[in-house]
Image (cartoon, rainbow, N blue to C red):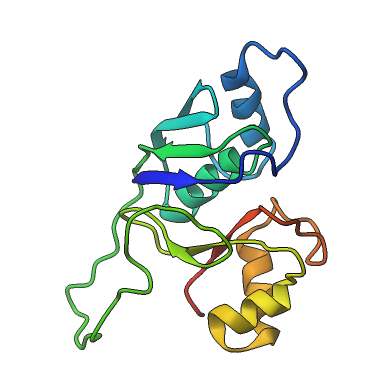
Length: 177
């Protein structure tokens, strides 16, 4: 959960001039994707969207935030969603990691670099800059350009073609597989 910043004048143009019920338009837009957003509530106040309700898993939560934020005219998304899916059982796992700083943090400005999402996010986010390609982003995030397909798959169906990304678009950067 947290507040996420987006570039207000970048994103899909889904509102008609003078659109009064932006909530319904965003909810309908989310419904065009294959994930289960049926229990997500949308509130719009100016250029800020607040998402409440529940989703079945963390990747669906992440996608909901990015779908709502990657809309022309939206500058912030307040993620208040809860995940209803079962939590994994780690009782028989041993070992550890020195730091998880790369994947845990609070939402914030994502001006051209990766940023961790809010509580419960598994992915990082990346704001596309002019001249970026998925291969270039993959090289920066994973150290290998050929892992671009991981980023593409994590952002489907928002991305329909790995060659069609635009400056200002915020992408999910999943943990390395």
